[in-house]
Length: 318
Image 1 (cartoon, one colour):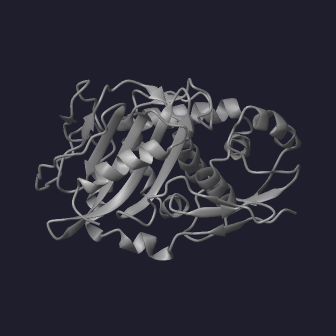
Image 2: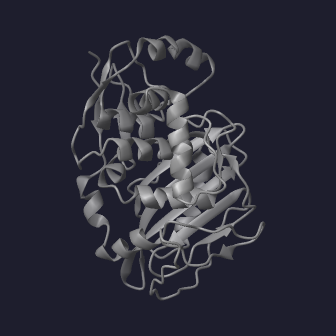
């Protein structure tokens, strides 16, 4: 059996989330679209019953350092309403789609903090596709037929290596096949109010898997409710068979208050990053959830990471 070693981010990660962030999780499940081409504020998010959730929060004006191109969205818990910049229209997600894959996996198979979870086996069919995926220049982790992955190991391969083959296997493990799993992803998107999002595959390699920065902030906010998700989305490196280390493309982890995130890059998508960070504002720590998408030019997610760093730095201090 192939052994994978994971080097996680520091475990105090969850404890760094201040108690002040708790009300945000109950209230922030929606971002409404802004006007194209300019930063916008959105109305308070609705509750599940359809009534407006009135959250008492001191409003603070920020001079957000928005990226010059593409689109972005941000929510600063407790002090500011959701805001966005750029054209609010669906754009390819690239591997940012894996946030939904991880979220659905964790909803279907809840995982305790620090627990390995159940074990799953790699199918012969997926193992046989490895060469084809290599030729398509997909992000992958080496697999063999029957190789066993714990749920946590699979999630870390998904979120750190951005392994497309693991994304597709998760679909099989949860729903018996990709079509049913993608349908579940889209149902979940509707439940979260992600009205501008469509998933056509579990990995985001398909350019018809599209979303908006505002929708991705909705999703990442919901995912951050799950301590296991926070852990796996904050892992900094993954060691593949043979000891080769795969660093997380989100090089801001451990810097600027960055807690968790997911990068994505393809030529159709450009560079994308969705993230959560903790920033100190007026003497109090607040959770910041943001997304930067369709960043160009570049040949990796690095341009989105740089744009996100500038955006984060315009919001309080680390």
